[in-house]
Image (cartoon, rainbow, N blue to C red; front, side, top):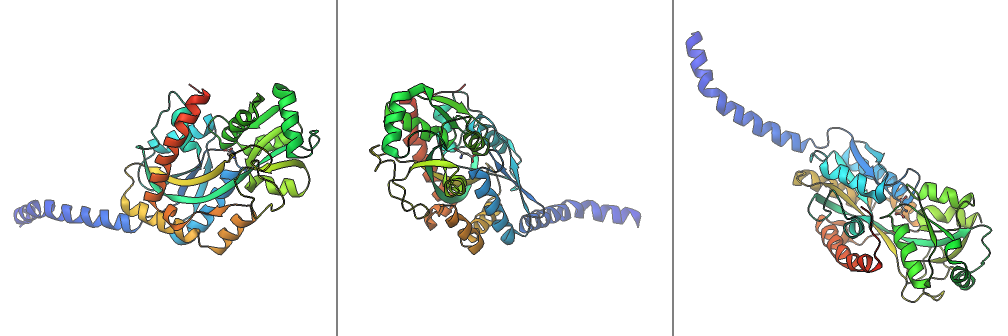
Length: 331
Ligand code: ASP
């Protein structure tokens, strides 16, 4: 009897094992997500990327049935966070939200420890956010025309804050200096939250940053607003001229956001993440919050994994030559 059982199970085990594994694998995927998901934010808590991430995470968790925990990993203009996610386990439990910095990093960083175009799985894009050019409350110029004159006359006496090399505020500042033909003194921070605190405290003179963070301070009069960085005026600040209207021909910077996972993340998990992302972009609580902050939900075609991937490729191709021509690099 024992021999028979042993022989029977000896033959049965490989088959049962294979069946069991297949069933376990399928149910593991069906069960995704079975625990909390980490959403890595490359900039400081309380900043624009963080605000979009927290609102998005709350909306996506309604569909996914698990909490999405925001993890701020700051440093090196967002590249530390991206490298962390590129190397994380590809199981759908570590995601990254990033902006234009994902596309500018290959040109800005000589030793980039990841490749934005090959080391990730793409979940989709979220929202576009305009930027605003701000001065500290007591900076002398009162409007864009006098700011342009003041900037050209005072050059490197002006301290320009940004959220690090690779932040969009850095990109905006770089374009601003180029369009003005002026050279400011740049002061980098770990995100917009500390950069804005420095502007509010009068430690720096100028900051170009997202409306998601700047609108409340503009409305309360704690900063001077010179212009918006989009080609057209924005709904949230209808009376504010664009930098182009103010005289900086063709000036345009808009922040776009994408959600990424490590390369190799199961397609079933990506599909669920994308489904939750698209549901979030229709969630009234999320859309209302974005509208209040001046952000615009991206069109349907950009909400898909393919939409993010092709957009990223186009942005890498667009910014590479501009950055290389400007000669701005980090090691
Ligand atoms: N607004 C920042 C940037 O310029 C990043 C942030 O703090 O969210 O890229």
